[in-house]
Image: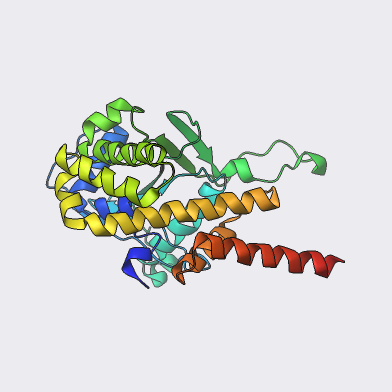
Length: 285
């Protein structure tokens, strides 16, 4: 796959592909302090779900914690279920299956789950999504009120510039990333929707104002390609929602990404969607 087009190899994951930065990020999110020598090991898994979908960032801290982190510009109500599947796969990769049948108790790291949100839609500073929110209701079965035998909590953190200032103050790179994205979006408006020009100007501005300066000087071209791809994907998803009047499912999102992967423009993708809709209508008739 073209490096510049790998959707999950986005600006955020490229920036935070560093154990020391992840340690700092975790401390900021939790409001804690960890010793600087506590080892952090990145163990991000790919292809966990269908359509080559993979988790954004997964890492272990001192062998005691497993942190699964997603960076999203749209809020997915099913994120707790997705992260449940991810954590199972992470644990499968580090536990000897034979040990599960041993008389000795197996020890596993404490899991924690985050979504860092930087979309355009209004969202609170923080929120919690639970796996139990997705459970079927059982009242019609005349069962006594049930407690949750299984649950998982995901902390949603709004990282848009100006939000969660305490967290931003404790993780400089996160604050700079938010500032860069904010500047790029403002330039899109200033340049009447010209995204490429907007990103180029944002890179110049931020590099000259000591915002992700070193990162942008080294990865400027990749950042341009990756951010344009992210935004083009968002455009394709928004168009699909307009056409279907429904929430786009994750597999549809990945389908759009695969079309971008093939080098199709947004207009060509729209044409394919139109053709697909037409065929569906003819089939119903």
